Amino acid sequence: MNVRPSPIRILAVDDHPMFRQGIAGLVAAQSDMCLVAEAGNGQDAIQQFRAHHPDVTLMDLQMPEMNGLDALIAIRGEFPDARIIVLTTYLGDVQALRALKAGARGYLLKTSLHKELGDTIRAVHAGRKVLSNEVSFQLAEHAGEDALTPAEIRVLRLIANGYANKEIAARLSISEETIKSQVRSILSKLNANDRTHAAMIGLKRGIIEL
Image 1 (cartoon, rainbow, N blue to C red):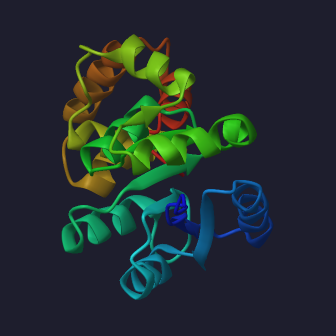
Image 2 (cartoon, rainbow, N blue to C red):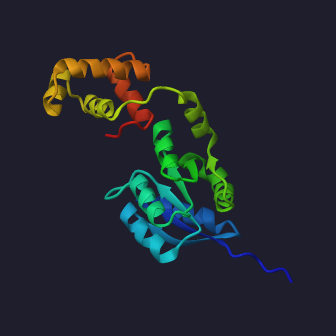
């Protein structure tokens, strides 16, 4: 008699109840997996992980109280074998890189869940890493480029919030000349035409968030 293997036990983490419902529906349609718990923010995700020890966790990145990246780092710190798939609406290579460095085993765009979720969960459960094609392309496109320094990211975030160089200098207590030099470096590294273009690229690639 063939004994059916235990279903893959899944924790879904997202701050939108409707989206969690959608995931529950997709998981329910797979005969080899079941949803054991849900969480609406990163803090809750850590508690649910401790309580249920899921085989695979589906983790949104943008959440209130504690974001998905911080939750991922905390869970992996406590449970190094945790298999976590990041789900996001953002196609940012920098954001993907941060998640992968923090130990994410998969990175999927929410727009491709219907097609790819089941196979991605199975692959990650089997010990493989999975990136959606779009994300792989983004990572490859920017590989080898000079990354912005933490100081430049701080300046870019203030540019995106509408501050002029003089105001940024005052806020960071450094000279306006230093800020101008950092802005030049930011434009060069991002291949941006101007400050507004740099802010747009920063947001699109996940270097900064507003």
